[in-house]
Image 1 (cartoon, rainbow, N blue to C red):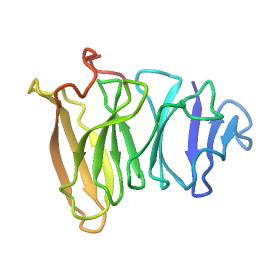
Image 2 (cartoon, rainbow, N blue to C red):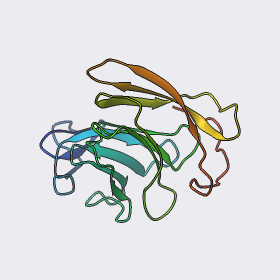
Image 3 (cartoon, rainbow, N blue to C red):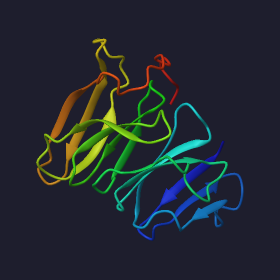
Image 4 (cartoon, rainbow, N blue to C red):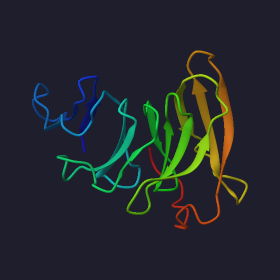
Length: 179
């Protein structure tokens, strides 16, 4: 689509269309985030959906057809500044979030509300970076492997996200998606 997104410490999220004058954003939202916008990631499965993380400790899901506000029911406090957000590469409703002083969370966005399905707290320093493995899980009870890192102690952890009973959408694996 040719749109780039930016967030900053001024609480502003902007969209830029690279095909037109790059000095003027095509949209700007200064009202929704109450602290800096740290992370923005587009959904792999829907061109109209993206997730943002903020120092205000909230994960938000946006429908880009209405950027005045996030999808109303799709906002949740993760109790830690949300430094990174990453959509699962094959499960359309799962998001991995690095939550500064509150570890890492796997969040389901499959219902009308965001729901934590796993909370990983083994790091003893600031939760900083996170990403999903693009390989398919070999264990039927696993949603896949995750790599997470913490800031001051510079540690990298690799761990498996387990499927909690009755917690995650039972939607079929959507197969490998294109990046």
